[in-house]
Image (cartoon, rainbow, N blue to C red; front, side):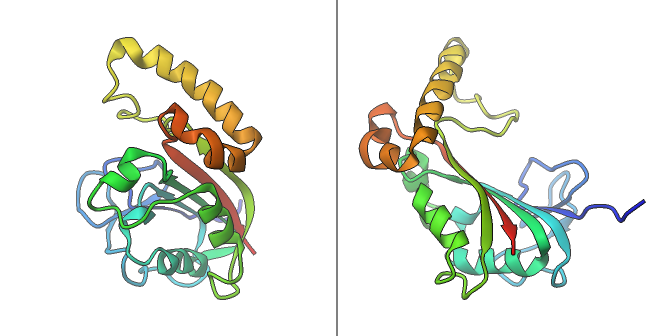
Length: 191
């Protein structure tokens, strides 16, 4: 049998992943390594097979440095999964601890373009808009009245489907008409 896959869940918060090394700046249940991700990651070069960063890079003043560290730590062919709030999401700009907001093009060009990462980049597998939060979890609908959850689920399927037909048209024409989009999901492979 081969070696066990190394998965890093960076900025896990209260949502540790099973079979992953869960890292966070705070030491709470499920955190394996307490680390300030504003600094160099405590992992050797080409160490991980996967990195998950769910709703954390908006909290860093230097998100390019963060992505460069992900690139350094991932093995060649390693996969980077990122979720960030979309710039049309009120919490993307309205939360004081968020340093920046992201659009479809921000992720698409930052992670795949050579000019931002000094020649290091990822091959994009997908970059997609989500009208509602895609990650299954305990707080996905916590702030939605129970009677409205079926409508949110229905609207999410419809608006997300339309947005994925052309993310550019969605962002430039109609995303604000439907209350904004909650997040962007990105998956890239280290070249």
